[in-house]
Length: 289
Image 1 (cartoon, rainbow, N blue to C red):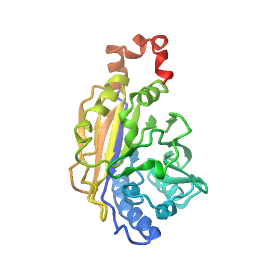
Image 2 (image 1 turned 180 degrees about the vertical axis):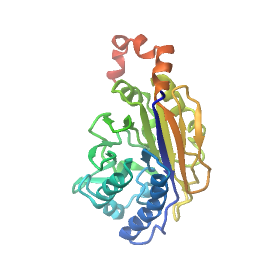
Image 3 (image 1 turned 90 degrees about the vertical axis):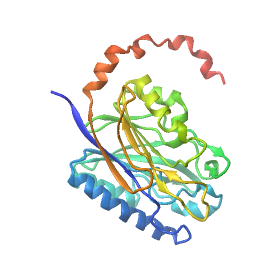
Image 4 (image 1 turned 30 degrees about the horizontal axis):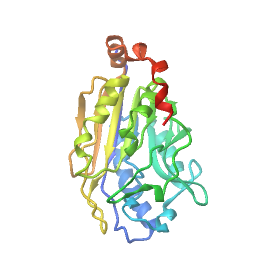
């Protein structure tokens, strides 16, 4: 019998003007997402992931300390606790991307992972932090991750998280595979232009190279006053052969659902023996630079 897991991705536009009080922005975005989360629960989704820092706009388009107030504790903050209650209600694993405060002045781009019984399993902190013009000033806001590339054994599957800019680096994607990930989720905030042609190239390539499923999430809309470009959605799932299974629209708030047959992983890895045939002893120079 096939081992099928029903998974979902949520893409959405920012819910409130960016000049509104930050607490109101957070509440509005959570309220918007809760409607989609409830829909996912009603449709039997077993694993669900939202977009990068889903509680607000992509504020890295400017550099101002105002947005430090958007941080919250993980797991002891209000959003993680809410998602624990929601996960338990629907028996649904939820990946919760947030702006995390560890201590004053130490902030991370993080995703909390909550099991289907509401248990907090741990978190992934974004490792690769861009500082790219125009409008991706992330080093101003985020300390690089320090938790490695954890894989979480959930009720339904072993999952890993790779956040946005991380996807440009094959090393961490490989480590997630070696650590046992069956599904890797990549919550993102990326705009049309520079990297759009890579959106459906890099992550299917990671899926093929490592023999796992990938769920890629991107927000939608234009965010004023910055207007650094159109967040072009097109969230999707791809399988270990790199085939896109389902894809969202370019410009709508949307819940994307796919049935992932985890038995495909064994089938593909038994055909393409990349893990057997890799030669780590020949790659030592990768760690020198």
